[in-house]
Amino acid sequence: MGTFQGHLLAGIFFFIFSLYYSVMVSLALLRGQRSLSSPLPPREKQGHRWWQLVPVQAMMKLVISLGGIIPEFFYPPGVNRMRIVDWEDPRRPFLFYDNWDHVTMYGFFMLSGVVDIVNQSCQAWQNVKLERAAEALAFWVLTLLMVAHLENKGTLEIRVHALFVALTFLVSLVLTIEVWVPDQPALWVLKTWMGLVLSNWMMQLSVLMYAPPSGQPWRAENPGDLAFLTIFFCWHLGLGAAMLAAVYGLCSLWHHRFSSWREVPGAKYQLCPRGYGNEELEKLGTEAMLQDGGI
Figure (tube, rainbow, N blue to C red):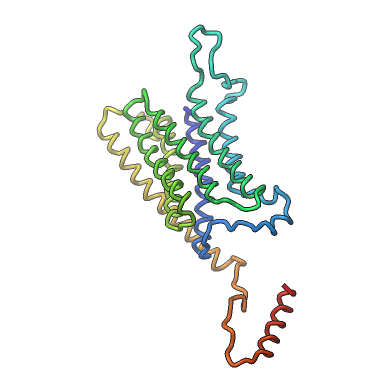
């Protein structure tokens, strides 16, 4: 991941997941849902195979994490970085610490995906707090690894990664709050916005450090370069908000014009009309049971 392709790939992965999550949040807000995904009761789970109950976001976590781990170990082809210690050297130095740093990050996101799959497809009752806790753990690990990544770096890299750490910290904090206070639309929006900014900033980071469009590297000794680095980060905050608003607008059009979701007439509860006798009420109750299939 310590290359242009590595940072860009990680940014694209985060962007895909953040974009998918922004669609989920937008549709949930438009439909007035109390939760992002309604868990199936045990009775409905009995009629499905376990692979039919696997959530899409969990599979995305697994596929994206594997897509990040494999290149860390085996790219370019013919390379093997799975060794941790050089046993041939008498000093026994650690090897490929940057790659193992990134593999650890991807591994905890994979763990979060496994928790989602087991919790939603194998358990009788879905524990949403457990899923949020696993996701929060993955982002706290990412934050710790990025803080350690600041050691022995130049001024420019420290500034870039410090801004990235601020984003990961905010996402981790929101996910931690959701463990105790889940299903809060304000937290959904904040988490999605920070996720979009985080992914955009990681892609910007890859271009900034490895392939600047001007062809000239950024200079840490130049105060102007450092100032514009923070300015660009603020622009990414606005870009993330604009992207979230655009996704919400597109989902609103789809929801109101093309969605098949409609309210069924007569599906709501109605007040029992007054003035009926006991015999008439029993008759109405019998008719209702027949219409509901005898349930």
